[in-house]
Image (cartoon, rainbow, N blue to C red; front, top):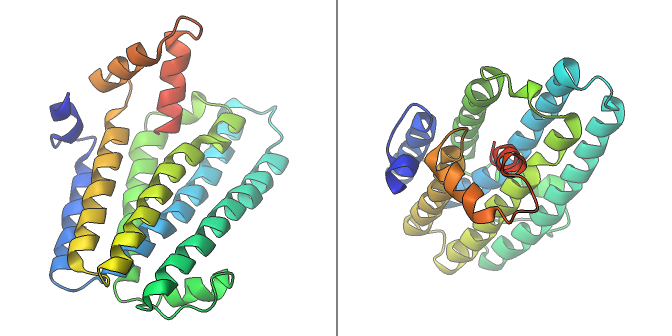
Length: 236
């Protein structure tokens, strides 16, 4: 099963390029350790923006009855608040080390401007935007997944993934603080994120790992097809 998760293939090729290129940039000093940390955090915003597009495409192709002009603004406000609260927590942790001179944690917009000034952040963001764009095209547009899910299903899709991602980032921030933003801490964060990403990528239609997880979760109350659908939705 591990081979199906980590062995390079067409599905995970963009993720392999992402992780190897990022480790290379960190080790040669083109990207600061904190750029990796905040790059992964900012990726949550990128994922949210793509999710808005997915909601609209689902509405256009599959769910005309949805209240799209309520659902999208609601998602933006709710998801934005979710990100803002976690931002405050992360800025507070990093401020302890003093390696990045943030204003007070609650000054979210000013702190994000400071984040963009960290060496390597634009490179990391470009890499992550490119990765998410490829994922959007080949994992959503090409297989026409907008025909499989309703607007409300897609609206809540990112939260599970983002909870795991933000937990990883916040955990990584402690390593950064206590290691003074070392390269080792950055590489460890990249590797841990790499493991999570590859598990999510491996959970795809008709995959071995998907069927194993479905069998484990099946309790007889919920159909396997519904469990399979929800797993594909939350890991998409």
